[in-house]
Length: 289
Image (cartoon, rainbow, N blue to C red; front, side, top):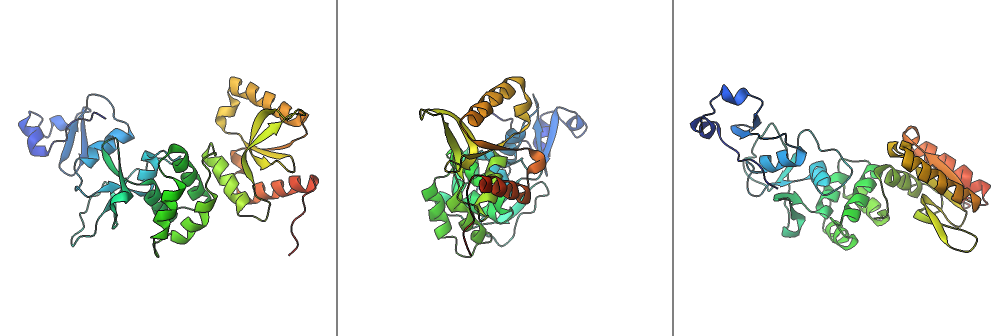
């Protein structure tokens, strides 16, 4: 990633850009005594790359900032989070949130020239600040992007001791699945996993009467022929809408009951209640207590 050079106020002034000149739209005040002359607008990753030039050598972007950089479906925070090794005096920077972390060599990776906490470390850090369903979505995305493997995650959690969030991380980790295709799909799956319903399966194959796979459902129970789909805004686009109609008619033609969820349904109570009622109509019975 090519980024402009970061200048101090003195260096910018020496280059002909005094205080008044630096108030123009072509200059960015990146941090305390850190200025950048812009040729084009910078996206979030490019701004982080610039910010990294003024951080200590042991700094690594962490938590939600790292999750975003590693491919999870989270927005880039307005103030990035940076992990630093313990020190007597902690640098105070208004533009970043600083966290103290003792990180092993394998807990830090490089992305686009920036130091970032590894997928496993990022998952553990996020567990301290996220609900279980949101954490499941982050973990699924990290697995799918290749930022972490199940083995790497298990190794990191094994040596996590009593780290903040480790109980939640250990509860969610066994249920992560790289087949999840979206954040809402991961959240819905977690709510179902965390209920007394039978184990739910991602990407359920829909077979016709000859056994040929003709479609896939986001989630479901093949045994009871119940499927679930989450429909985001992209499903309203004409081409996607027509593909969806084709898939749904194939599902119905082969005897599947389809539950469709949208943004208004994204809560555990609605999802679990409707899933339970659908399963009951197909012969499932809850286990006796």
